Amino acid sequence: MLLGTAEAMEQHGNEELALALLRYLASRFPDTESGRVAASRAESTKIANGAQGGETELKVWGATYGIWLGVATPIAFDADNAQAYGAGLLLGGPTGFLLGRALANSRPMSLGQARAITWGGTWGGFQGLVFAAVADFDSSEGVLASMILGSVVGVAGGLVAAQQDISPGTATSATLGSLWGTWFGVAGSIMADLDEEVEVFTVIALTGNAGLAAGAVIGSRVPLSRPRARMISVGGLLGTVGAAGLAAIAEVESDNAALGLMLTGGVTGLVIAMGATSDYGTDEGSRRARAGEALLNRHGGEWFVATPLPSPVAGLVARGPGAGERTVSWRVPLLSARF
Picture 1: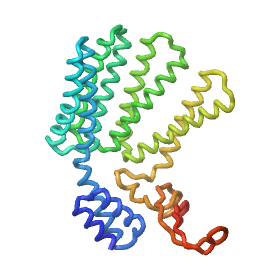
Picture 2 (picture 1 turned 180 degrees about the vertical axis):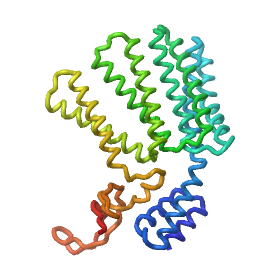
Picture 3 (picture 1 turned 30 degrees about the horizontal axis):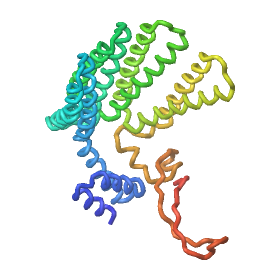
């Protein structure tokens, strides 16, 4: 019955709901014929959706980038009239949206390929800002011109990279790797007591790009799924914030000691999360198929954490005011074990 419902949802265009239901069936009834059919159809549905999953990414980012260009370009050219800014605001967003849509319609674009383009533009703009700081640009016009040029170069690089098949996990891993590399560069610069702005931004550029490259390599060689890459990064974030909390509780007075503790906590969190998520699998849907269980699960001889599926439960009030009355509550399973 549920399998038929999923098929009906897919036929009526509700692919996401159909995919969620198929994954639920596959996780709850893995040893039944319906469960195996659901798992197979969930995988085929995921692949079909993923082939063009980058369309929304390109449209949204294109519109946002267009709005930014509409404001940044008049400033970069030192425009002194309101009409230039008005035209930028009026035309930037729609133009970016239309260009993003045209790019998405030019060929099937996966989410990973689209993310390579969009993050290439974003990261390129940031690299332009870093270059402006290293080159000691004094004017805001020069800084914005450098950022615009950097973003254009980044988009071009993303377009070249998108000629290859890029999984969502690899794209996410590269994106998060660049952010972690930037954080390591900022913290390292403070700990090294670098006073010169050129030195600080040079270190940030080097570590950020190293993180981007490392994330791309790890994401493609391991390989990582998108959920696993994000969970690993969350582990690092929890380790960093937790270490900051410990430093505050211990009243660590040295900034270098506090930063060192935070870096250690972050790296430890990343390593632990990578080991703890080793069963997430290599594809986008493998881990999500386990959603709908309890928070902590033991199935097939292994422990794993999943998203619990709340369900309504009818019952009677046992005691106190309203005893004996019917009530409906929500049950959120915390533990599920199969031996």
